Image (cartoon, rainbow, N blue to C red; front, side, top):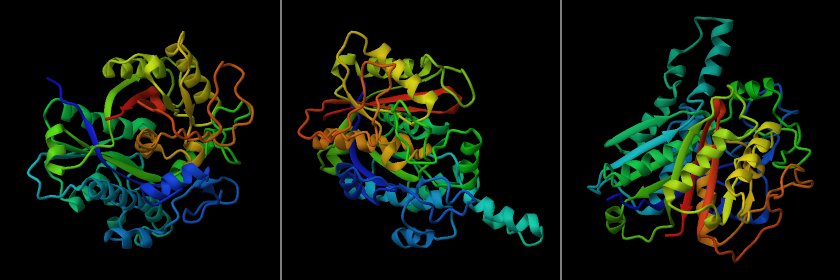
Amino acid sequence: MSQPVFIAGMGIITSIGNNLQTNLQSLEMGQTGIGKMNWLSSIHRDELPVGEVKYSNEALALITGLSPKIPRTALLCGIAAQEALKDAGWNERLTARTGFISANTVGGMDKTEKFFNFFSKDPASGKLADVVFHECGAVTELIADYLNIRHFVSTVSTACSSSANAIFTGARMIREGLLDFALVGGADALTRFTLNGFNTLMILDKDLCKPFDENRRGLNLGEGAAYLLLSSENGLQQLQKSPYARISGWANANDAFHQTASSPGGTGSYLAMKGALETAAILPGDIDYINLHGTGTQNNDIAEGTAIQKVFEGDTYPKMSSTKAYTGHTLGASGAVEAVYSVLAIQHGIIFPNLRLQTPMKEFPFHPDTELRRNQTIRHVLSNSFGFGGNCSSLIFSAA
């Protein structure tokens, strides 16, 4: 029989806070972390706002005890992953089988960019040691060693759905009895590569983004990391801890429409949401809150909204909002960041407002919430993460 999968611990660092508590406070206060670049060196510094973590690499290294010479993605990963384990009371002395499934999209790109600056001017001056952690998997291996997790280690990189896919991979392994614990999530740091790439696609807003607004102009990039310690029932007994919630449903679908755009009809988004509901064995009307992918681009918001309209046709639309207006789009970390926010919504009975939404999109009979709602009964949250290449994933978190 398939086992239930519980969330025993969580950890997070984003532009709105360096742990669970400060993130929750910023969400409740409606405080965005998006603003002018500080640590990223870019010619667009004064033009494009970003959701940057408020610490230098040296400061991040001091928190973790890791070297400031490793990629920023790894430093962010180490902080959030360590918090999740500590929050759950996990330690390496536990005999249970523990896996680490981590997502990112840029790996050590920040180090590679610095290497290239030197190498392009003088090939003899470039240090190959600076690019040894370039690939995505190297970041995972670094932190797996740091945490002393070796039973099962894997990396997921599927663009913006990466950490959502990492989460349900761990959930599946626990459900099938392959692991007792799975530390799952993702991390991504801002780099010139990603900033310039998204700018070339002309989907970055030069002002603060406003998801699902009729006059939306694009997204803001962000950075951060978030991890959840998933546990089997047996694992919970070892931890002697009450869970935050369960992960009850998940699905991944691909509409194969375009390399960087969703199908206008939201085919992949619809299939992912429908599949997650089927895995959870619940109906659309059982969903109390949707944490929207909600990037603020013309394409995403129309596709996601169209898919929601299909899924909930004939039902009352649940409350919904995009939290990317707080953090920016954290790419490979976004699915995990929003998973943490979804669980916090269940735990505290809160619907977080969709910041800066002034004019609801005319295409839909629903619109995201713009005010903080407290004392809500939230049993099931649907969290969407839709990536480039049409890789669409939806997760459902349920009260324990």
